[in-house]
Length: 247
Image (tube, rainbow, N blue to C red):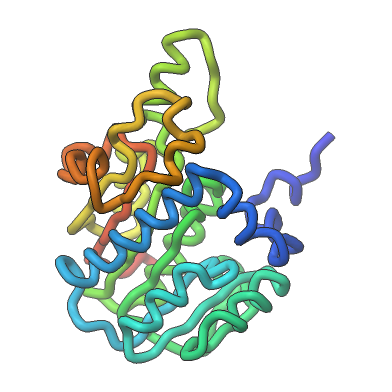
C-alpha cells in the first residue's frame, strides 16, 4: 500500500542526485530531449524573451537547465527540495545562488523575479502540485514577468495514441490543452511554443537510433511549427504573467 508521500512527486528525487544525470544520458529519448531542450531554450531567449535581469529555476534538480540559463541572465537563482540534487547543481553552476526550499509551502525571501524556468517537472507532478507550483510562480513574478517551461509527457502525442489504438495503456495525463488551461488559471498566457519529437509516431523510434539524431536537423527541423505542439511528445513553452492571483 502506497503512502501519501509515495504519491507526491515532491519527494520523488530526494536521494537521486548522484544518479539523475547518468539516468538521462543512459536513455536515448531523454538524451535526445535534453539536447532539443537546450536548443529551444536558446531560441526562446532569442525570439520570445526580452533581456532578463533576475531568473529563478524552480525544481532545478542537478542544474541541467540552470547552467544554460545563468549564462543568459544577469542574476540566477535555483531552488529544489532535494539536498543531493542541489549538491550536483552547485558544482555545475558558477553564477547561481541556490536554496533548499519547497516554494509551494514556503516563501523565498527575495524577489521579484523577471523569469521563472521549470523543466521535467509538470509532466511528472500530480494535479495538486502542478497548481500549487504555478501559484508559487505567479507570486514570484511581477505582472509582465515570464515563464519558460516544458511539458515532456504529452498523452496526445502520436506514439501514445497509437499504443491506445492497438490495446496498450500509458500513465500520461498532461496534454497540451490541459497544460494551457492550468497556465491560464494561474494567470499566465502562452506567447511562444515549439514542439520536440513531433515526428516520432511509434515507440520504436525512441530507441538507440535517436542518439545519432541532431535536434537542429531533419526530421526534427521539419516539424518545428507551433501547430505540431498538441501532438508532440514534448514542447517548450514561453508564457507571460497577465494578472496576480487572488490572495
